[in-house]
Image 1 (cartoon, rainbow, N blue to C red):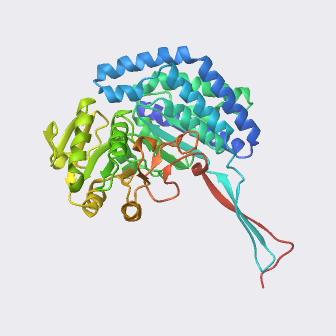
Image 2 (tube, one colour):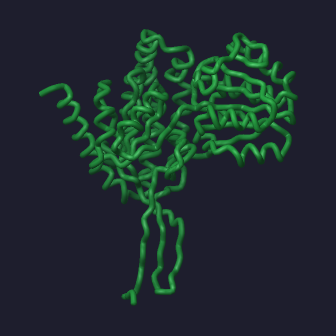
Length: 416
């Protein structure tokens, strides 16, 4: 038997177990899922020393691979970040159960009553890269929505994800739910990813969460439906009517708070009439350690065509002077990724035009793009930011991990 045969057999077994668990989860009471998530939160916190030890192995592996400081920051777990993970689990646990929610209810002249209600998707495959907290977020959200999940974390976060997964399974056992409801692929072999993409009989949807290479592979080769989470080429446009204090604070936070996350600002566009403010912002960024590739502003290097549409995920940013809001919008339409874009302005008409003409999943005004996060949207956590237009869009929380069905009730009703 070849290694490929071994991986095929492994993934087929994981898929079959997930499908069986999904049938159980579809009818589990809300209180049982809540109990499992609360127990998982307790287990993650109790295992924090083990998780930090496991993360130390991953950090060493990441440094050997030459990961950038920003990517290492995405990978790193400490007690505070584990605390945030626990808070996310509890927040998801506390939310209303989406399964069975009546979305619409109407009566027909025929005498039929029709209800459209939320129902689980079934089995969700999540393929992600270096952020180990996705293990907890994705596991919690899928469970809350009554889905089984197959998690395939990145090679960099292999040990951290396994330690977190152990705690999630403890929560499932405590609540009397099948451990197969949340499974973690136990190999770094990339053949497992390709297997997941073709498991049409057991996986109902794939969610890729990572860089352009991963998402592109999934979109090209998946036979299973995909919720695409594309790169975050995030723009901030400083309008001529921007408040200087707000603009400086928003851009600095949007770029430097955590430069390695998908909501970090990657391109600064400045109205020509606000050029002096734009230069102040560039100076602020450089003073904070950000390398600025600029056009029309004084930065560290002259911006080239390669800088537009670049997701740096690092302490770097592109900056450009534009003649007006029309040019800013055209630039974003050409180089953006439909993830998150922001305007800083006190002009309501300019903000309305920005919101109407751009079709990004998230559009912001006078706020840091680092708020592009399901937790900050009140979803407890997120499985990713979907940039496509089918089914789910923007932060994907528990409600977005459901489908719906129609319940039709008659009383011996016949169609003439």
